[in-house]
Amino acid sequence: MAERLGSMIWEMRARALAQQVTDPDSRWLAPVARVPRHELVPRWWEVDGSGTWVLRDGARDPEAWADAAYTDRSLITRVGVLHADHAKPDDHPEGLPTSSATLPSLVVRMLRHGRLVAGLSFLDLGTGAGGLTAYASHRFGAENVASLDVDPYLTSAAGERLARMGFHPEFVTADATEHVPGTYDRIVSTVGLPAGPGLRPVLAALEPGGRLATTLGRTSLIITGWKHQNGVVVGRVERDTAGFMLTRSGDDYPPGLSELFTVARDTAGDETSTGRYPVVDVANAWELRSMLEVTTPGVEVAYEQRDRHRTAYLAHPDGSWARATAEWTDPPEVHQGGPQRLWTALERIRNRLNASGSLPLLGARVRITSDGVVHLSRGNWSASMG
Image (cartoon, rainbow, N blue to C red; front, side):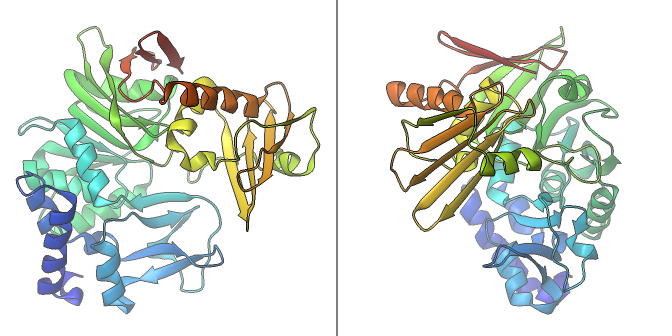
């Protein structure tokens, strides 16, 4: 595949990418500059103007391939159950993205958060296209690197592609929320791990004295910490954010709350009120979204905008839902139903943000017990997840 772009072309583009996403004295500059990222993503999905997933094939358009692979962006490689590698040109899958090649700048940031050291064992949790595994193998030697994913095709394809680059790390196919084979001195996760029981296998796979860097599912919070001899991981919420896909145990994510979102769209609700703050796209208001997950775990969100008309939806597995609708920044009309008042919970968070100027998340202390419960604290504020 490298030959189809031409070695001079990809090497030049990779060097430019490395200079963009690392510092001139960074020890990650050489791995980014010397790994042919396009070989890891021969095909990918893009959304066209109508919101339809469209297949892109690098071999058919080498210029677009080079632009995509050596731009600091994530490339979606699987939607629902359909890998781009297996798709036909006229396929248009539906559903959520289920795998990607993470943007290189974020890969480098996560590697830095992991505090990798030569000679220590390292697990890349969430193989995806294999970029993080390739960078780590280049810098520290593949014999110290393992990569895990729930999808057997991803581990197989990444293994073959890295082998062509001369890297032979260990690839493991497993559900990390059920079992992580082996133990490691460093674990970096590029999927959002769940707090609670689903986090236990990862904690068990971390050696005492080892370091974990991950996000928590449905949040943008990057959690880092060191494992103590008593099995407790102690660290902090980094002053950095990342948006990763949730872990999944099956071939696709389980059905979401689509029926409840239909209720939220069409029902007057048990309570109608006027909201205090403008409608916000909660999914992309990362700090708000993170605090909502901390305080009201399990909430799913949706957002629509037509011209100046904006609507946000919230739904919870317990049957609670909320709809807030307004013209641009006008106070919204809010409808809520079910046992919880989800928009009210969101407005409490926004009250705190406006009153204090920030939320007590970034920089918070973290304590993760062996049962997977994540305890957060900062000043007089504390919360637990899981």
